[in-house]
Length: 181
Image (cartoon, rainbow, N blue to C red):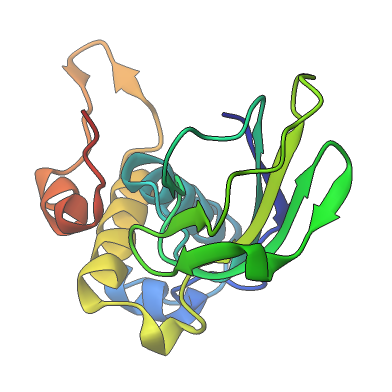
């Protein structure tokens, strides 16, 4: 079930100055390091929780049509943009779509039969919160905490200590993680 990012977010969920205030950093000398820590924190949280924090467009490629309702692997999904089977676009009205977290997609009738080729079913969708103001405070706090951790601990490990992620970050993103059996 390969996922491909088609359109990355236009901005990060936390402004650089807000993160600098959180870190209690004055001046611009560390802006590059702080911006890198911010981007890394956002991508790490998104990957760990199956989230798209800011609006972004994704493509899900399947080898065959799902046998039942498909739960999209990234949340929150705001729109279903396109469905293609064997290279032919399928009308979006042929599907029942429930946006949100998790988002569900089910055909109103049987899926069109793919030509039995690898990657024959392609689903494009938009996920993420529309603006930084729409992001739950717990996710914004998790981003700040993890970015601060990355900023303060620039090495993965040293001889005397192995670093791990702050436990608070996991606690803040836990409600957003989709557990699957």
